[in-house]
Length: 144
Image 1 (cartoon, rainbow, N blue to C red):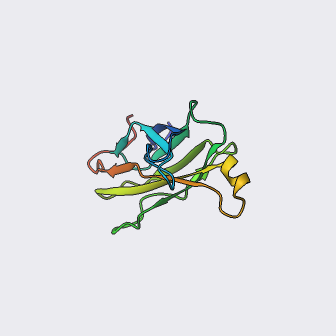
Image 2: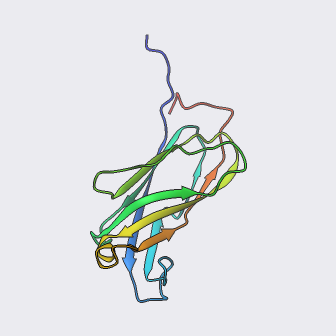
């Protein structure tokens, strides 16, 4: 008989980053990009959940992930270091989810076309989705 083991939850968030006229967007130095996440925010309820942000079509090919940052938690760290896919269209990390807290994440994108124009200062596009931790401390993940 195989021993029971936890099967982690997987949450995939689809991301679009669309150039818009300056001042009309929600991201970029001059609000020139409209970033949308579906779902817009997530609540993590199980421990060791895998979270994946994925850039999807409608987003121009030149927009890629550059990284991710998070506001330093008041409690124990909850996220692993992120991993960016080879094509830079996905960023993945795990969430320990051991304490109840709202985690402020900043997704960092690069516009590769802008980087070639402004080589010393490539265009950064930052967006702040919400990740809510609400651990299910009573149960485990073995039956899902």
